[in-house]
Length: 126
Image 1 (cartoon, one colour):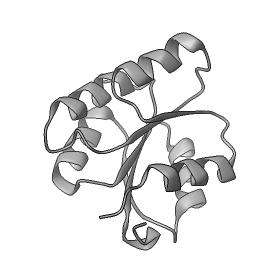
Image 2 (spheres, rainbow, N blue to C red; image 1 turned 45 degrees about the vertical axis):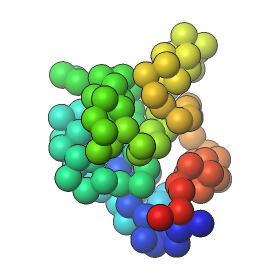
Image 3 (cartoon, rainbow, N blue to C red; image 1 turned 90 degrees about the vertical axis):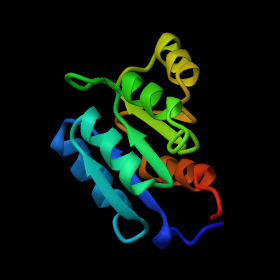
């Protein structure tokens, strides 16, 4: 598996507190990028090609589902695993995450050990 310190993870959430919690949980283990909206997330992913994206669903202008569909439609970014992180915990949203190309789904509030395990599972060797 790729050395964690070499892997870049993009954190996408419009709530700064949520971003801060994820950054605190993952700092020192991965290179981290942050986008506070969907458009910036697409731009970052297209430019920097992170090894994984942690993506909130509910965001203004471009929600997480739209971000995921946009990235999966682009040959340059379609292989990036996307883990949705959201407070919406129901079967309809879980199914929609998978249908639009998401690799996994974690509900807020998340447990740090769970998110770290899922990240390790989805980051592939270079």
